[in-house]
Length: 297
Image (tube, rainbow, N blue to C red; front, side, top):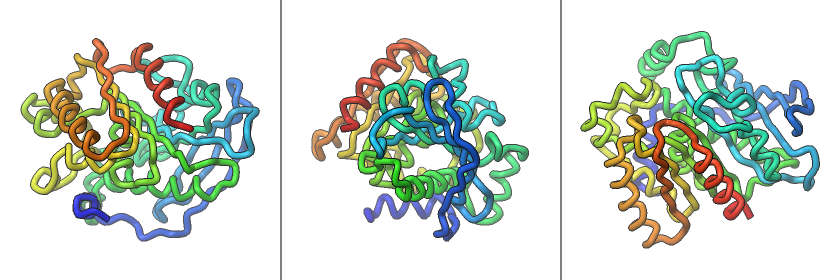
């Protein structure tokens, strides 16, 4: 493990030493032209994790799979259902429909405080975790790592080219998870290219929830040091030029820095700029679908 990744994991707090990862299928239905499985997963030894797994109705015995990371948007009740229902700032059809129509499976979980795991305020979860030596962001990322462990146990999923995609908080989850886990081969993040120093300079810290802040992070690491851990694996970053949650100066700085890193290590790195704000545009949808089709071979 690289020194940078080791330091990053230490900063993310104490995570459960839990190895009995498993899942139970609750029901499987046909929904919106694809197969939809409702699951409950054991990922952390603390609380169960509801999940959705969508697959094409027809296809190979093992389908390539994408991890979908849901956004925040202040909508704590939505969680993983964003995969199948979409939201006001995402294109239609839903990601589940779009990805299964492309021949991929896609899985989403409810993260801490969202969906069927909601009921406590985000601030309450953060405070309790800090008292216990945990970091909410670290615990969320841990669940994603454990989800990968679970997906690898299924004989109906091909995980050798595992991809992850998400918008906003989901996009942050995507690139942070890829920085921590080499099993994620393809990373696509929408409206999530946040460079911390530029966010501070733009007085933008309150544009992101308490969940995202890691004690002591900037005394040890920079944003580009974290994102550089993804290279040389494929990554597409899609941003809106008027997205105040991702200051454009920071996006451009990271683009230049990561271009240099990928030139040195190889691999595919792209930033796609739209003229919009904090939303997935139709052009973004077309771009990420093309990128995923090319890389998921």
